[in-house]
Length: 367
Image 1 (cartoon, rainbow, N blue to C red):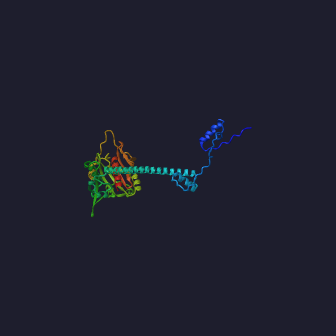
Image 2 (image 1 turned 90 degrees about the horizontal axis):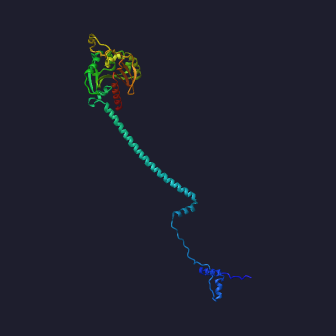
Image 3 (image 1 turned 135 degrees about the horizontal axis):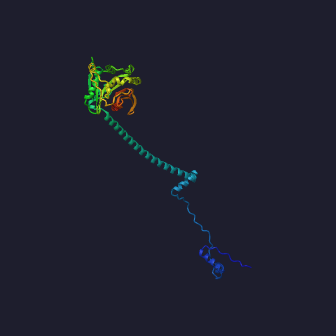
């Protein structure tokens, strides 16, 4: 019958427990049994539950931390971790958006500043170009008065007056040809040949009806009615002097149709007045005495008989439509154009056409 081994006494001390385990492994029993054999009374205290003295309860408040605040918010508002994460993401997005808006605003501000400076520079350059154009096309201001500009279609640099009382077609042609040969002006200058008549109130310029009456032309009556009262007969100084006539237009539609109808006799009526390319006939001495003119013909090249074309042709000069008449040498004999709805120009020079068109545009701009 197996002997019952005495139960091990629970030991509180770890060293006693280790010794007890060692004895049992060697088969020598427990420490309690060995103590009884030696006659030693062992007084090994049985481990008991340690009683902690009761202390006074008090609460130590924790320091506030971000984690604690989050935990408190969760308990108070039943906020989930997911909603907190979404809120954090929303806050980050708003911060990024605000930063992006600030960057965009700064970028837009820089762009607007650059655009404003560029616009200002372009305005200054444009104003300078317009002023330069004005200086290039305007006449000498010391020679032009406001009264001149109000009385004539275009400003001029020099004026010569001629009493129209005894003038006829031949004498008007003579006035133009004489000044073509003898007038000395600066390049770009305009000479105004003013035909006037005496009245009880003083001198007044001859109107358009009076001019064409002196020239004894075949101008259609409807065209004459479409003209205004003012005209300007003069010369422009370029490499040589070139004649022109500007006529005020009262009815553009009637004037345009009337000029087309007048083309068949236009060169015959005013060619000798404005065209220096060729004078079609040589007047006899008796005719010269009757008309008071000394018109002579140009000398054509040997073997070439100069002939005037039978009809006008369309042409565009500096974006302006014109009607031009040439001879068989392709010289411009006569041309006319409506520079605007209120002004008709008749001349024999394309360069004069361009010059006067620019001056008229500059005058309209300054107004």
